Amino acid sequence: MNCKKAEEIITTSIDGELEPGLEEQLTDHLESCPRCKQEYEQGQHFKWMVRDHLNRVPAPVHLKSQIKAAIRTIHAPVSWRQHAGDFVDRYPRQIAGAMAAMLLVTFSLFTWQYNQPHNPPALVVELVKHHANCAIEITSNQPEEIKGWFKQRGVNLTVDTPPLDAFDYELLGAHLCQMLHKDAAYLVYENNEKEVSICCIENVDIELDALDRIEFGNAQYYTITYGDRNLVLWQDGETIYSIIGETTQDDLLAMAAETRGI
Image (cartoon, rainbow, N blue to C red):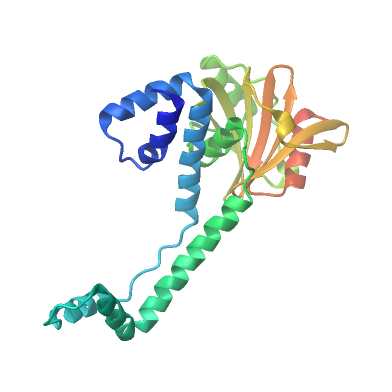
């Protein structure tokens, strides 16, 4: 399968409507084509973000029975225009409500998409996805216990597990996930049911210059907003570090400085 064919069926695959044979071909292509894989992952993330931001609008209680009753009263064949006109005459408030809901959804999607980075690095998409979706695998507020847990799984945590008490965030635990075929170590903190994750991942490529660069204290960081999460990233040697959360970038920058001991 080539890239052109893959691009034509990626959306169908994300919607779960692709026939098995083509699905297998697409999977094989994505494993060998980073560009198409990034497009696929961004499409998945967009669908997930839309799902989480949509509010379901319930239909009026008696709407279904009223529609059936209206259909039963039709004795002579009429054009679809007349059907539509009669329906609008009978149910003006319901039609207006449905149209308002559709406009609200359309505006929300447009606003959300307008505020997204046009081409966010694949790593940014993955960082947010795993921050939001991956469950904690070890529950502990003891840094050394968490480091030992990572070590047992072949990951030497190269960042200290910082106490974020000054920011009213308490260490909850950690999890390990695969990200762009690499092991990514997550430390998870919580404050009033809002989580912040510190992630470190080694030997992964990312175009940091595509992000906003900020000097904070005596160090350099890169920032980006994706969806409703802010991210602060920095690089030490071959390791990329990030702090992700639904809090301000200023708070995340301060946490990053605490993490680095700067």
